[in-house]
Image (cartoon, rainbow, N blue to C red; front, side, top):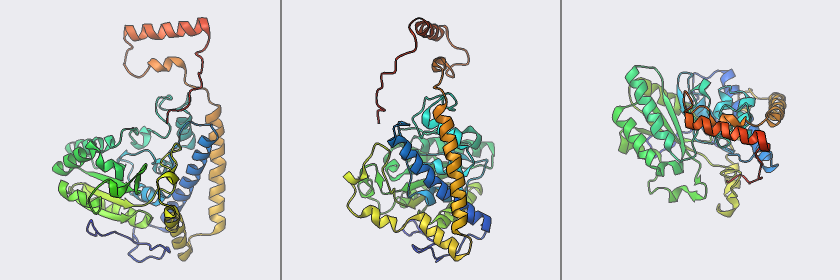
Length: 373
């Protein structure tokens, strides 16, 4: 693997293989990577549209980062633990989480696994070892390190994966998690998606280091810098990091160099702080276009095939949206559930008083307050 100051790349900007293509990937794997990237972008575009239409309150798109996320996601095994940041729905789609489950969370309805208690896009999927996303920046880094250390003590053949942006490297938990995992050589892979902007703060105002990958050296672990718009290079780096972690060689910090080709969230306007022409510059490096060109060169892509699976996904998405949108809100009594095994008397009295108030005066009025972000 290259040094932290270099950048691993397999596909050049035109989609031509300039490095060794991962030998373990079959034709079906090559197509699956593309399918995951394209459907992720469709999901992103529809999610942002739903927010703009006022049908959901908030959305966090990841347009432009599909290769960075799908490439890592393809290296994750079912026994691994996932500690994501909040634009990681690409990995959930890749791992087969049902669309309805994801959309229920965006609406916070009665069938939402979180019962409407989490912000939209802050998913939690126990079936794939996906730990709940949190809004505070970087908290998942130390959590992943702890999970990796626990697996190490138990002798489990599992790896913990932690995602964060370039801005997350400025958090306290970045130091704590990296230091802890490095000391114990815990089986953890830290994925820093350097998309160049922590909302409006550019990456060169985030650190004085030449790269984020080189920060790994201070913690006694490997640091690998990879072209985050090259899905094959990302997969190769992630696969090798996982193998080394399981072999007892300790954690790896992957810096995937990519770009957020859109707003930080539905509440953001990047045109207010990004230089003119920067987005267009990165659109020339679009990870989907690059990988499509590679598949064409291998005769693994046809227009009909892409149109067919895209149409099928869009149809399934519409169905899931309609079902999630028509589902009722969570029952008011669920506010008091899931905190204690047995509800304490004081909390039970509050619940009963609220339900009695509703019985006498009708449902609690919706004051129509706007979503706070």
